[in-house]
Length: 293
Image (cartoon, rainbow, N blue to C red; front, side, top):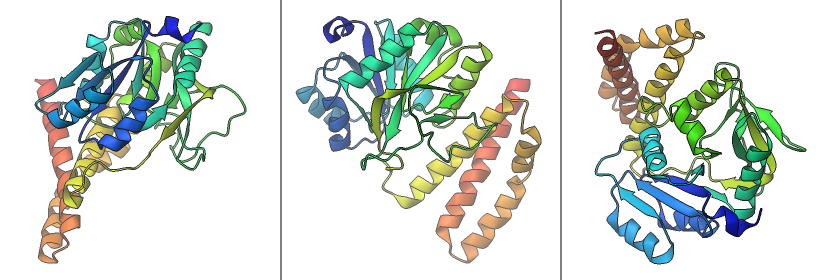
């Protein structure tokens, strides 16, 4: 199908939080031919004005507070008016040709729920894009492909799907703030006996590990707090690893002791690290109490 015919069928949804303009520019510059929706969780009006001066954006939403990855993308889906959508991270560069490959693979495979690109870094080295669900293996190595492959799980940095399918499965579970929402979606896809295809001829350049948070202590807190909290929620929804999660929860009081000793030894990064994990467990336990009442 010609690219012009796809313009009205595909919307690319991007959620922002404290984004660097230059990185975002590189991403948007490659996808000028498609409709785009941007959700900014950092309410950056200056960035919005700069982007809209250089790109055609169908809908650009500034959220007054950070509602998280899952809720942000769900908000974008609700505003989407096309049959197909691409969930894309602002630091994930994919060109028009690769988007079309994702569309073609999805529509040519009846039981395929989601397609994703094969991921590389800036040095054209293969990086992790898909593999096993967290309960079945680690995300520690990329799959070396010679063609398309079915995977249990894929990163939320580049997900192509039908809007109606995504809505019917329940969108992202908004209990996940940053992490594990992509894992949770992939697990739901597997439960429905649908599959995910990592497309060999669709290429993305993903800048893994580039931090948007410049303050070191804030970065430690946000990463450790939300990773542990979202991990607890993920395994709460699974029959596996419940004993392992209970072991983590039982460490809450130990974290208080470690906070105290880190304070008196003036190891402030450790203070933030343990405090982040303590508050994650506290928030998780509060969630469990609410759901039981």
